Length: 161
Image (cartoon, rainbow, N blue to C red):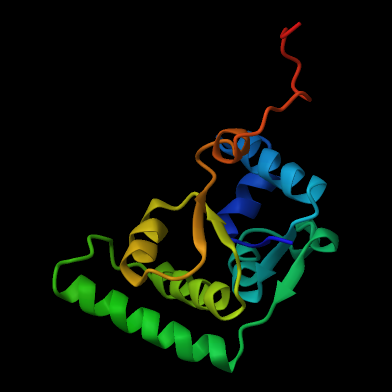
């Protein structure tokens, strides 16, 4: 079974029908649940979501909740050190935003818990991912799931026949 840790922005787009990436987020969610992949949410992502949303809005019955623990903290420290050094040396061009710490924390969780994928649409996260080179794969839902996984989606109302 493939394990996927989803970034906060995935849930924001999934739950906002008016957002530009809602269709992509919904497609991934439906595909992953249909294929019985293990979808997870970090307590860090829950905290970020609850800044503007409510816990009751999240599809928790379909998600495994991953709490931030000591091994995650140790790995996050390593990832943050790499990120901060690269930023100081001019090798990482991202703004100095607090979210970077949350990105490295969730990347640490994905690494320590042996996730197969980290799902997000955040291009700044990709820069950090490329810098730290973890074992899990980065999955960008700016592209629809059927393109990424090479799936023909016959549930759409296309005039194929």
